[in-house]
Image (cartoon, rainbow, N blue to C red):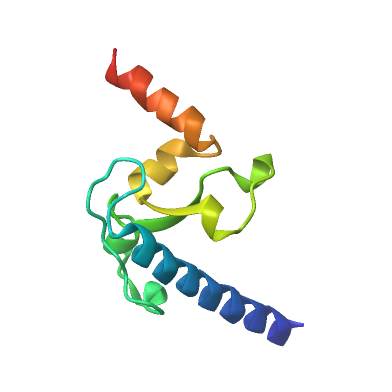
Amino acid sequence: MEQKRKRACRSSCKEKGRQRRSLVRRDGALCFYCKKEMILPEDGRHREMTEELRSHPMLATLDHRHPVSQGGRNTLDNLCLCCQKCNTAKGDMTEEEFRNAQNHHANH
């Protein structure tokens, strides 16, 4: 059972790496939401990152524009790279809900 779990994790990590590379080629290294430059970890090196880097607000993360919790899928057209700060703030909001919340806060 443990062996299957390890294989599934490796497969999942490889898939995330492929998705991340595709998104960087498509969108560049700017956060999808705030448009600030992000820190892109080296492929396959995320486990070796220091705790300081793992918690850095500008670390690139994968985000579902339409959350899985609301029926979103793990497809490239529903994924984007965003900084950890925006990803945390967005939570399980849709892209539209998050942008509306950002605009609301910017106007008050």
